[in-house]
Length: 310
Image 1: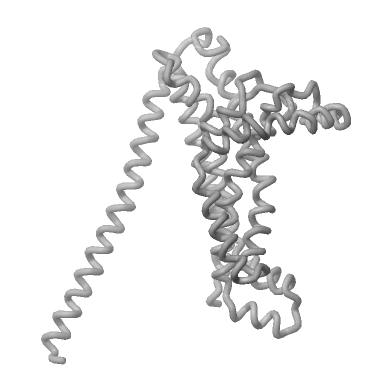
Image 2: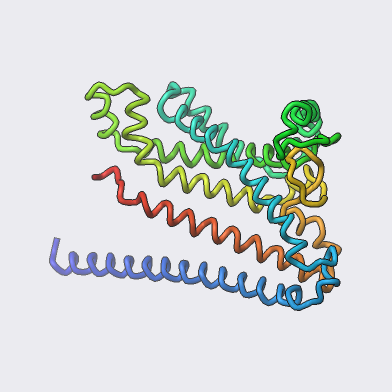
């Protein structure tokens, strides 16, 4: 091949690299600009809420008295979801990637991916119509036998539509996300490290504990944070399961709400200050999500020095 053709082909490659680099940079700048625009919109629209007299806000005690119970409800529901979904999701991913036969693992992987694609309204309808009624008995038992614990204090809900039920529904929703992403991370664990551990006499679990889990630590945290983001922002499923009520310490009483569900249920009829109040609630949820992601990135950065290539 002549030097002219080689130079032409090299020039074409450099042009392609420049185009791709410019497109990637433009996409990154666009994402930041959109995020900034959304933040500015929320701040501007929420300002009337913070300057209005306290007596004109919902409840008549000011915006922060109104939003505090909803923030607590949002965090409680998300916490319950993660407590349930994280260990189960990691265990399912580990079984699919390292324990299940290849034919079974492939089918289970498809099922997990399919569960992640089910619309939230289906989960909400299942939680409201079936799960809530099925949990009335267990809630009554918890109130009678463990009522001395504040989160299980009675009287138990007669409908089963409680913050604990909402948390369980959210756990089922985020479980496929955590399991699917964690499975992919486990499959990327360096095979040389795994074979070396087995060659040194380690059992399968010891090999996983020494070679797979350390490699996947950052990925597991990322998967959990994505699941947390889904739990924090879920609207319809929680709205179907929960009914609005005052802030309560018990998880098995009726009442409480999350920010996303509160906005979805009230925004269509809102106007004036009430609309600005709901947008301010969205701003609070935006800040919570941003804080969660910043903390997650900080945690992941502490473990990024571990690589399968070292």
